[in-house]
Length: 329
Image (cartoon, rainbow, N blue to C red; front, side):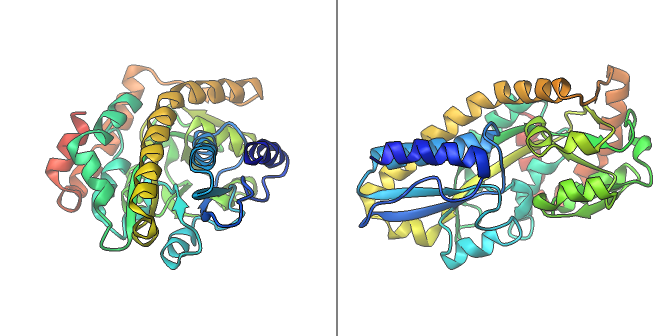
């Protein structure tokens, strides 16, 4: 019966993005999974829904996951606090949000640190990458895996072909010191802002541009209120699929082992599917009338040269060894 409920709920989400993804049965442990992304095709949405469906089918009677998308339960400014308070049990926030807990996560924000998404996945599967999953256990956070969303691209209210084209402009960024330094290296002004506020800020001119993946740019319709997108491929957007130490420790050993196994398998499957989803949403943007600026090798090198000093600026905080491991993945 629950499988039918899941299907109907998924259909409802595609229409209104309100309500939970599952209707849990009495006696089951309920785990609320909150995230800020909408639509039906975004990699995070697909991964979250797949995770819930697997848990609810395979752990029926023991554990049930409810998915709350599109900031319907908590926005990205409140979700980490909610996790520690036990108001939500599972999150998938951007890795850029953890700088205040550990500067080591800044390695994921370094511009041009990864050649492509395959390199990023190799790093997350390395000893150094897996070690970062446990970096915040003293705070009460436990990483379950890394959900890739794709590489990032700049959009703005005018074409950006060279970094100097951004001089004097305002760009929305996440609350990451590395991201702020990257924007400042372009001669622009970083404006930290919640994800749910970005479309309105672009539309009204509060900010002039932003950086994101094809999936975010398409599903949030950022391309509708921007002149164009530049295919810089400058930075990774990935999420820390996570829970709290308190919730994980509360599970019986057999339940916890099955929960972690499903989390790992869903993560691997999700990351394999991301490249196809990103390519599809890039084409969706073009089909909807969005404009994409491509760069030749010389133009792209100017972006790399402009941003490379950001690595050195944060080397002492992130760690030279960690930066070397990421760059060499």
